Amino acid sequence: MTLTAIIISIVCLVAGLVIGFLLSKSSLNSKAKFIVKDAKKTAENIIENANVKAEAIKKEKEAQAKLKFLELKSQHDENIQSREKKMQEAEKRIRDKEQKLNDELSKTGKLEKDLERQVADYEKKTEIMQRKQQELDVATAQKVEMLEKISNYSAEEAKNELVESMKAEAKTKAQAYVQSIMEEAQLNAKNDAKKVVIQTIQRIGTEQAIENSVSVFNIESDEVKGRIIGREGRNIRALEAATGVEIIVDDTPEAILLSCFDPVRREIARLSLHKLVTDGRIHPARIEEVVEKTRKQIDEEIIEIGKRTIIDLGIHGLHPELVKIVGRMKYRSSYGQNLLQHSREVANIAATMAAELGLNVKLAKRAGLLHDIGKVPEQESELPHALLGMQWAEKYGENPEVVNAIGAHHDEVEMTSLLSPIIQVADGISGARPGARRQVLESYIQRLKDLEAAALSFDGVSSAYAIQAGRELRVMVESTKVNDEQSYQLSYDISEKIQNELTYPGQVKITVIRETRAVNIAR
Image 1: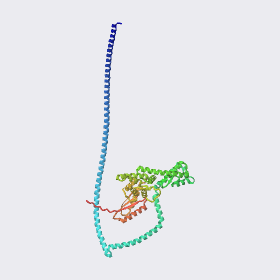
Image 2: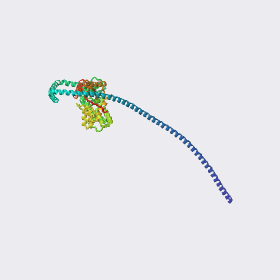
Image 3: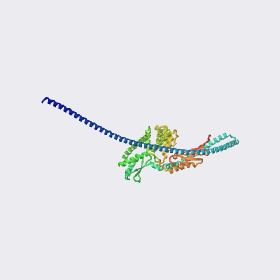
């Protein structure tokens, strides 16, 4: 091949390469332009879609904001209406109170006028009485002077002579009277003792005593009665000896009566019978075992009840014996009112009253809970329950205010602290509220009327009031008809009449009040 041909081939090759390069470059530029154009169009579409979505979200948020605004506005309106309603009610109450106050003021004005009129009348009567008293003094002085001239004795000498002679005569008569009374008492001692016993039975042997001393044990069939009695009565004798409870098995169908004045012993007997009947093994040895276990169970339950009670009331530092006594109150009732519930109620009432008066709330609650502990003695006592409870509280280191409140809640001792009248009032509220005690209303009201009528039957008595649920009788006497010495005799006569003619539970305190009031008004 020639050189020319080689050169031409190289030139052609180079020219082809240049032309191919130029063509490929042009194709790439057109392709790039297309891609850029397509990207711009895609970007514009994305932006347009984004704007549409943003607009939709904006409209949605605006709608939600409007709804939220309307909801908040309605709530605000409701709150405003509620406040306005409350303000209207408060204004109504204030208007009612103002009206009531105006009525009270008008009544007070009328009473003041009546009082002024009565005071004026009293001053006139007082002036007349003073004038008459002066006339009487003058007449008495004249009579004394006349008697002194006739007897040749001065008034003082005559008085001394009369006193000495009366002393000797009174002493002689008193000795003779005492001797005759002693002889008559020896002759009539048996009859008087029988009367006392009969009167005691009449007072105590009421339906209430029966309800509080008898429990009914229900059985499935009368066949169980024979098993409880046992051969020749061995089982029932063993049960009575172990529990101290009289078990009455009579013709009453499907029932056995448990009779005992101690409610704890009665409960022990009831639970023991239940265990024995359920177990089926009834014989003397088994009875003693079951009764002993039941007694331990009841003792533990009593302590647990006492602890739970003082925890509920927030009382701390109570002596263990007092805790046990509090637990025993669950099994004691008074006029159908459970003693523990009554004591808790008195404690809460006393605490509320003490808080209102700014006194010690804890001491008030403590005294309210313990005020009737004397009603649950393990052994019979002749002392009233208030004095017995006071002795126990003092023995176990209670606060002196608590001790006095326990002893004074029935006026057995003098009140020495502000806590004592609070306990007395709280006890009265708890016992007197409707439904608290099982007592016929008509007979209760009649008994109070009979007490007042007995006092009003005596001369010189102006008014009489039965208070403390019939435990006390306040008698007001006319000071002009009854003097101080006669008031003592009147109190005794009223007590004798009530004791002989009326029937009442417990004891009645008769208080005769005589007073003279001198009233003047400084203007």
